[in-house]
Length: 149
Ligand code: ASC
Image (cartoon, rainbow, N blue to C red; front, side, top):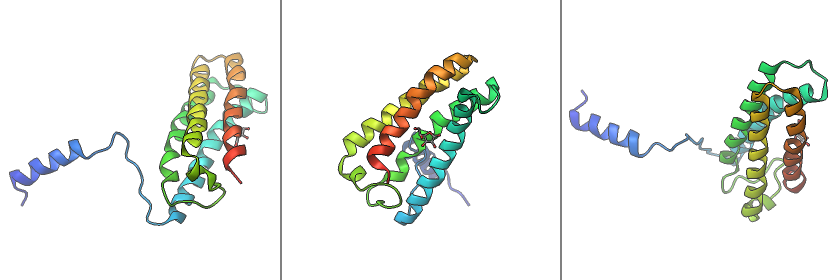
């Protein structure tokens, strides 16, 4: 039976211990690597949909563009959790863990560019998407060139 005290404690724990965003925890580096790969794939699928629209490979559907761009801007922020201490491996270069400031700088830049792409897509203007896709792709590439094998 739950006592009042245990309910109060649970309520306190829920309000004080809960991080703003639940962060996954990984028992093994391999789990973090899998998480990174899955999350990057999800990001690529969404970004790719917008890219295909921007390049004309896919027909312009404002709803798909807006939803996919918004998803990409959200998903990129889930990557952080996958690069915790001691999770070197996969295609990630060890430099990530030695140059955390620069890695973070490039990642934050990419987040900002995906935010701009999401804002552009939300307007429903294909021209706005076309203008934002290049800088967004360049910000992805800058980080890959520096930190992906
Ligand atoms: C993509 C994808 C990337 C980026 C990058 C941009 O669609 O999978 O990694 O765009 O290639 O240069």
